[in-house]
Length: 175
Ligand SMILES: [Zn+2]
Image 1 (cartoon, rainbow, N blue to C red):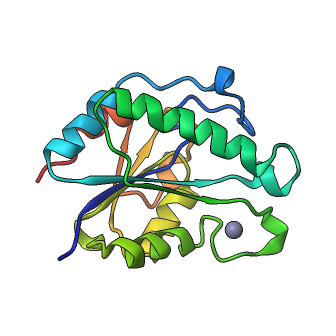
Image 2 (image 1 turned 90 degrees about the horizontal axis):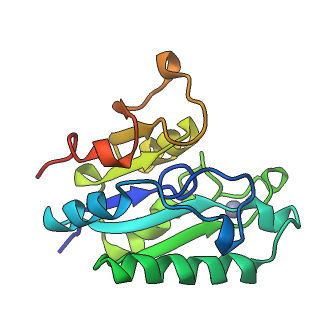
């Protein structure tokens, strides 16, 4: 038994991009996130969040700050009847050359093994080409790059689709 999953990057996809975000007061949901996630559930997708959190490795905030923010964020999803299956994060700074920091596929592969995910029928929604590259390396070809986060070089993107935000991704994902 496999499951199909929508993988979401966090900053720039779920919430407005703030560099090295860790305070709940700085976390602002992007319009349409809950509505889109309810639609994904309706289609039978699980939802997993995968994010690079090098602010931990760089010493800008503590691992516990990340967990507190995550706990709060998951409560907001829960209050909107959305169940996030799991969250994966890479706490390392780039210099460590770990296997989890996107564009490496480590976190995707960990999720795949943990939940027996059918990657061919899963999707990745990100705001950076490193999100798309990591997903591709993990066997996900259904990718959406959103304009709601970092600036994206659309002509050089490897993403299957590019759209304004997670809100519009509803138009691209069907059963
Ligand atoms: Zn890492």
